[in-house]
Length: 326
Image (cartoon, rainbow, N blue to C red; front, side, top):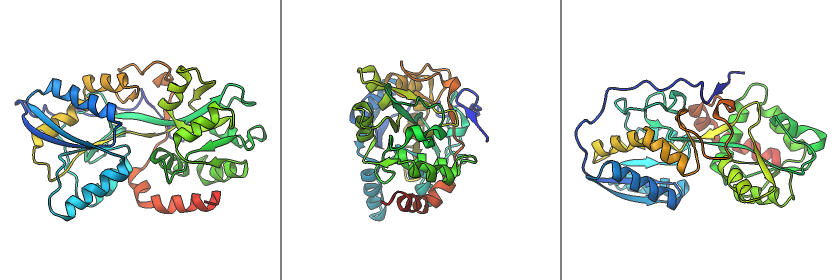
């Protein structure tokens, strides 16, 4: 299986310095970041570019995209920049011709593998799906395949991929992997995998020992462990699916210089330091992860074809729904 380590992924080629002039004016940002994180991101960007006023609207991706599409239909999209949870959302906009290629953006030391090959959108961090494991679990897994063993029967849970975007990416990434794929998903279901709600519901089930193993996003498990929950976060050896909280510029952007500056800020050392301070695994391998995260050198990411996932997404989710009886 092709595997890529976080530190081993090739760094993105540096483009010629963009926008040497000072940027100014109003930048309109639509983001799915949490309120506190969005406010911190805007504040840090404005500190670097005090001439720019940022108007920002936050909401879940399932709120931001309908709003944007309604604006597009009305002929008046307001956003210059989108900062959303996962690349699948942006693949759809890319296919519709709504995004602007930005080859001039300086991607710093972030890996080319997490950016769109045509530079329509750029991953800004790594939010992986791994395992929250109760410390009293009968089996301490090292691999995803361990959860198909008899000792793990009826002890694993995961969020619904119809609720959690990260869970949807996880299912699609596993389905694409040689050596795992649908046989692995089918074996998990035969072994009693439970699908419930969102990441928080799964985390609660594992922390409360209702389930021994939960498929959850990394920072949630790590934060709960730091607060004293009897769990640990495990990055299985076969690899992890990741959402990258990508940033993209709309092809209708009114303030292009400020939009490019925003993209470059997120990918710069300052932007990657900010991601780490906010409790996320930075994309730049030079930047130390927050306390409690595994060593980035030891974490492998699943190769993931986002264009394929966007095209097959609904069919994959329907197949998984049928598998679990949803």
